[in-house]
Amino acid sequence: MKRVEEFQELRPLLFSIAYRILGSVSEAEDAVQETWLRFSASPTRPASAKAFLSAAVSRISIDVLRSARVRREEYVGPWFPEPLLADPYQDPERSAELADSVSMAALLLLERLSPLERAVFVLREVFGFGFPEVASAVGRSEAACRQLLVRARRHMDAGRPRFEADRRDREELAGRFFDAFREGDLDGLRDLLAADVQLVADGGGKAPQWADRFIGVRNVARALGALIPLFGRSGAELEPHSVNGQPGAIFRDRDGNVLTAWVLDVAEGRIQTIRTVLNPDKLGHVGPVADVWAALHEAMRARRTTDGGS
Image 1 (cartoon, helix red, strand yellow):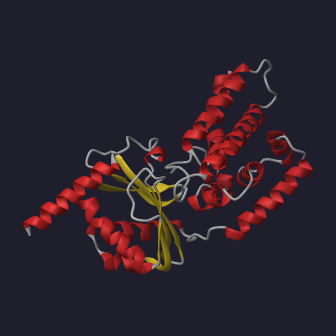
Image 2: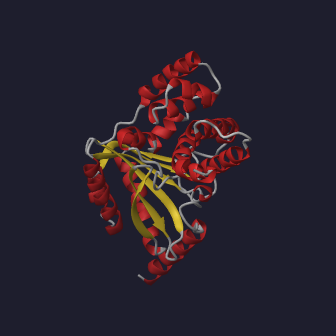
Image 3: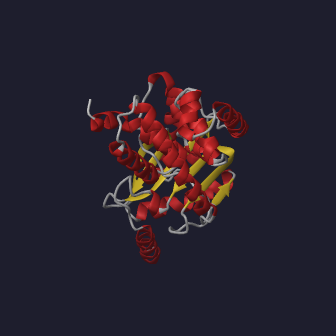
């Protein structure tokens, strides 16, 4: 098999490793591309393309994450991973680990780890690499990797997200939520929210938003009640979609451009968290990005026209 064929066969795995370490689709794609350049330039053919490529993409991702963490500390408002609509790598034997590890809640927990802890956790716990492979990938001894994994597990177990066990139940509840949102049914929305529900927005200082976070049924329902007519007046369309393996939706303007991505955390038959990604820098891989400010201004003009004519 030619190198390019080996690489293309393993590309979904490499992207999935990089995305979980970095939480960024664009940075993960860049890491995978840099991995190919190193693989194609290697003077000798590695005994295992999978081992070589997995190690290379892990090292590159660790280096990128170290510099990215400084930027994230200076980020305006809450920081969320770039929404992932579909994980390209599938492994039936590790489907549960893969699904849980790509959720936004899990990726936010991974942010608590050091770059090395994060890489070790992803390679070992999510993808099932042996300790010799993990040690080779991160450039540490097996004993050191075992210690890194112990610390990583401790952090992850302390805040591990609890999702509804039955995926169909989650999707059914999400469908009811988005139907109620479309219909402007505030009572129906309230009935689906947990008492301590949170609505959290990642705008990065580059999109309009009233607040970073709303907490509690009353406040979240009020915020949703304010958003419903704005989306309606701007001609926006709601497109239910799995986002990071969780129920969610993509909102598009009348021309089909992406306004925002929403993700729902569901547990105990209620919506626990609504995460919205508004930062246009994080939506380009989903499709052409809308001008959210222009959509907001259009909605406000429509409201003034309606109010003036009533």
